[in-house]
Image (cartoon, rainbow, N blue to C red; front, side, top):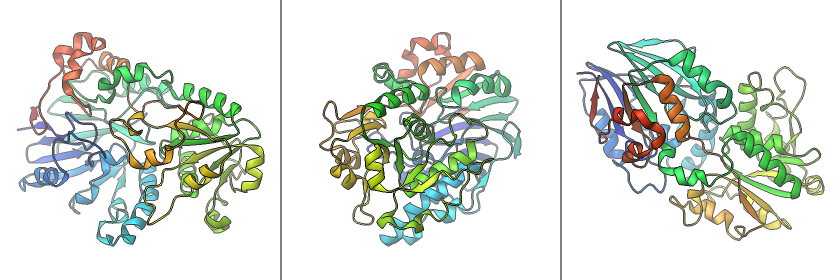
Length: 452
C-alpha cells in the first residue's frame, strides 16, 4: 500500500512529521518539536519518535527539511544515523550558526550528548531546485519558496502517476514572494492531483484582519515612520527572520545607527551573501552595521571585519561605539534573555539605561503577556514598556494568508486537498475564499493514511 501519512501536525501548528510511502520505502518531510506553550499536541515527542520508527520493515530513504525553524527540525537528533538528511545550503549554514549557541548552553548544562552540530554536519544540501531526484520510485523536486525563514522549500513529488505538491510553511508577501510566487507555481508546479498545504492563518483570519501591516514592504514603510520619530528604537524580531531584519535595516534614516550583536551580524552576513545577487535592492549594503562586542573586545569582529559585500570592496560590519551611537540615534535589534544563568543577556540592561526607548515589536502577538503562547522571556523583556507611546506592533505573518491559499488552489486545481499545520482542520471547510474546493478537502486524524 502507498500513502501519505501525517504523523503529527493535522490539528496543531508545528511539531510536524509527514511520510510519503511506496511499498516498503518512504521519505519523511520534517521532524519537528512541539512549539513551546502548545497545549494541544497530538503526540508527545517520545511517542512520536516511537511511532515513526517502530516499523523495521520499511526503509527510510531520506528526511527532507523544509526550513530551519524548530517546529520542523527540532527532533533531528532523534533520527537514526544511517538515514540521509537534506536541507537548503543556506539553511544549513544558519542551522550551524544557531547550533553554536545552543550547544554552548547544552554543554554548560552537562548535556554534551544532546549537542546539535554533529547531526547538522550530516545534512546534505538539496540538488538543483526545479529538478527531480528519485528515491526508490518516489521522485522529489525541491522548490525555493518565500517564508519567514531564509532558504525555505516546498516539494513537488511524483508517485504512482500522481503529482503531489507539499507546500511546507510558505507565504507570498515577503521580499521574494510578491514577485516569484505565481511564476514558480505556474512554471514549476501546475496541475496537481494532491495538495498538502499549511493552513496556519486559517485560524487567525480575525487576527490578521486587524493588522494593517500585511507585507514586508508595508513593514519597512511603517518602520521608517517610527525611526524618523524616535531616537532610541529597540526592535524585537526573530534574528532568523531575515526578510524583516533586512527591512528594518533598510528603514533606518540616513545618519542613524543600525545596531546588533555578533550573532545577529553573522546571520545578516549569511543572508547578504545568499541573497545580494537576487534581491540587491533589499539585501544591499547601505549603512554600516554596528556590532555590540562584549567588553568592547574587537576579537568578536575577527570574521566580520574581513567580510565584503559580494561584488564590492565594502566592509559593512564595524564595532559599535556606544557614545557615538547615542549621539546619532539608533535602531537596535534586540533579543530576550533566555538563559540568564548561563549567558546573561545584554539587551535588557541596555534598554534600562535608555532615556526614552521605543520598542518595535515584530513577532507574533501570541507570545506577549496573556497571549495564546505566552513566552516568559518575551514578557520579561517587554515588562514596563507596553504602554501607549512606548511600543508598537510592526509585524507581518510568516505564513500564507487565506487569499494566497485560494490562489494556490486556483493555480494547481488539486483533486484532493490535505490541510496541515493548522490549529483546527475543521476551520478549513468554513473559509468562504476556498469556494469550489471545499468538497475536495479531506480531513483525517494524525496518523491516519491517505492512500495514493
